[in-house]
Image (cartoon, rainbow, N blue to C red; front, side, top):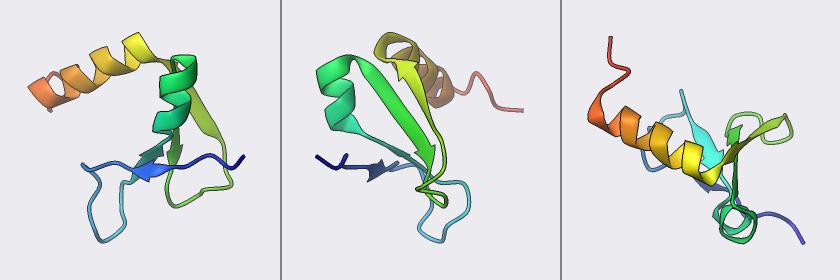
Length: 66
């Protein structure tokens, strides 16, 4: 079965900094795969779902703003 990748809703419509993730893998394994949407055949990173959730919450709250 081919994995279904979803482009992040925070990625812009004109390319640039875009990531994709595979929600079905996250739901079935507890691991969130993430990759660069401009390089779909390149490597993917895998994060523990709890760690990924904490990271996303930190980004949303502005913890990484310069």
